Amino acid sequence: MNDLLSPLLTPEGRALLDEVRGTAPADELAVATRLRRGHPAELVSAALAQARLRQRAAAKFGDADAERMFFTPNGVEQSTRASVAAHRARRLTALGVTSVADLCCGIGGDAIALARAGIRVLAVDRDPLTAAAARANADALGLAGLIEVREADVTEVDTAGHDAVFVDPARRGGRGRIFDPEAYSPPLSWAVAAASAARVAALKIAPGIPHEAVPADAEAEWISDAGDVKEAVLWFGTEPGAVRATLLPGPRTLLGRGLPDPRVRPVGRYLYEPDGAVIRAHLVAEVAEELDGGLVDPTIAYITADGLRHTDYATPYEITDELPFNVKKLKALLRERGVGNLTVKKRGSAVEPEELRRKALPKPQGRNAATVFLTRVAGAPTMLLGRPGRP
Image (cartoon, rainbow, N blue to C red; front, side, top):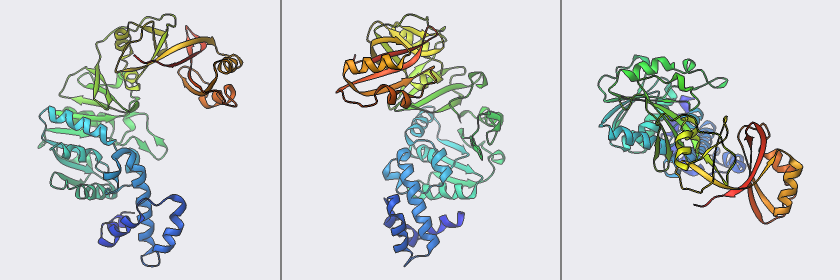
């Protein structure tokens, strides 16, 4: 597979990549047949495969960069979204970091963001194809002067000459996602030791990591982008013990204050859905205090309050109806309200949103829109009907 990347870096390969750019899946066979008349079949196949990867990568890197970069299937899947990498690079710059050892660099997404922030990067990956892609990406984006790519085992790399260390262990294996941090490659314990030895370090981990697995001398940050939780980061050399949720774009950052769990109270006029990073960081109490609200259930991260207030960390909804879980009653209520567009959200319910939407709104005809929350209120399965609140 590594042999298929090098030909794409030649003038013929680059010209072919330009020619197949934007090829739709339905057109691939016809395009491949035409191009194979003048180019080697393997090169055409490699160019079309790379074009598909670039189309997938645009969601993370943007069209302008993705169309110039080189990807592997795993590289697209595991690389950091550009906005998240840029946030991390800004934090490192603010800490006075001018050089970073990027361990397990993948196809170079984080190295690119670091270099664009003016930081010198040693990017290390042990996979030959991945390292070759990272090197090609540094060249393609004009950052080769700041990024040195090294094919090596990260556990054997001396990082002493760098201000900071960034470690991004592989969290996928042959059977999919790896949930045991000690099964990461390299293991979390090694990554923590490598991070702890540096003046400043950032260790990228899965957002579902148990809080008890966070080292006492680390700061833990959960990051979401446009409402989707993307990753968690353990920071060393910053604020030991701190917990924060960062929402992008922004950034908007909520710092934990160690508050006790919020009180449980009856459903008020408004329901607030905290951002996923806030929930993962266990900072729902901080948002509830800001809203003078409480929880609808002790096990559910929905905040309810009587007043409508603005917060950066939760989305408000005005609740119009509260009823026990009953599809027939919901169907009748939606017909009565003239609802033809139904959004289904759930927390603490086993019901599939699409299944409920199909049963409750089999023939959408109304002009109104509504949101139904499938949840528990004081332990009982409940449906809350409402609409977005506007402070």
